[in-house]
Length: 256
Length: 256
Image 1 (tube, rainbow over the protein chains, first blue to last red):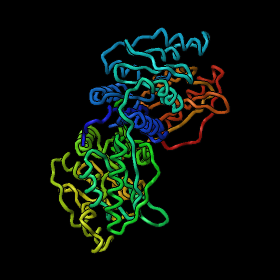
Image 2 (cartoon, chains in turn brown, green; image 1 turned 60 degrees about the horizontal axis):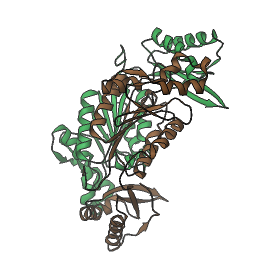
Image 3 (cartoon, each protein chain N blue to C red; image 1 turned 180 degrees about the vertical axis):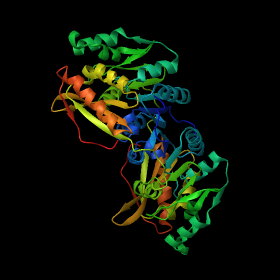
Image 4 (spheres, helix red, strand yellow; image 1 turned 45 degrees about the vertical axis):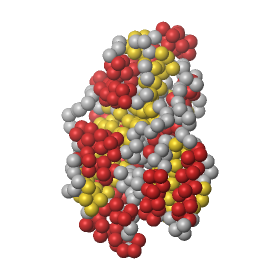
């Protein structure tokens, strides 16, 4: 199940912020990045939420950057004392933290000389050798070191940063999905579903229960790169269930 | 920053499910558990999202159960082929997967003998020696092995299961929070905020920008177990900012 032929590159997302772990804030960056990466044919394999602590961030970055092709972090790159992501990523790579001249220039343009105080200048500090990630919303850039992309935590900024990266991110064929709505509970379709999974080992078939108008049903979701295979698997399941008198509905195409 | 005197027990949450990583489903269990654990005085230190794969789940469980006092997993305990959490947790602990007689009895009562097929019986399989976690919604139980609590993925079921555990979860004093709304951007309060953090090293002070009616402001959030200290720190920040002509508003008390 770990790797299948023809599958695209892999990614991890690291969400950084005490406010997520305390329950104060509900993260919006992971759902967004998950959808965007799937559309690019990049397979999100893991996500982590870690606190605003240098050791915790550095460890997550080091584990994930060695294990996956791409890593995206969100959060912790602002001007305050609890913004420690740049320092943590520098530590993860064993690099010095340096003030980037181009980042400083952008901050100076955005804030003006008189409002560019030391706290804001901290946002120009990046690990040595990092490449800036543009911030079309509020100037202070993210950055990239090797395969690690460091984005802002504010969702509008994180999204805008990701947009600037999109054309440079090489994925595989977009992961497509097909959904079959099954008018029976999971427990009554599980055996047939497992048979279809064995017949189509190249696809990933997920099963998700739902409740609607007092009835229990199942969404069978087929994921993979080849739409022809997806359609074949969905048709197979529909036929096998029809033979057992179980009604199904082909859902509209969806993206992931 | 890692451990402070008097702090409560630690926890991790492991969200299991391809549907979260593909962006199809937005996880609702982590935000809920984060709030509930904070209210119990249990400190959520990390969260992970992993796919429905035995190796990935087992590795996350083994890392987290050794590092934190409590681990909660959600997802992957249904009747279908992609529900592999029980098997993964058994592997993590090096235990056999066995059919639990009490779990089987509950399933038999819920479904009736004729609808209790082999797929549904799979939901009675737990690692040897596991203790069941009651499911007041739909019978199929979760389970606990040592410090690892295995809950359902469906949010209503996960919540109901957590409720049955609440009285048995020993935390510390509930983590409280106080918020000061600051009518100035983060970059203009960062220096003062860092000073206050140094004066109150026992508290965790977070800074979160917001935008309202075209103005940029900052929420300074003080977290800790002692409300008196929280109030003292908030008052200190308000006074220090007032001396600089920056207006602040004490927010209503909140829970985390």
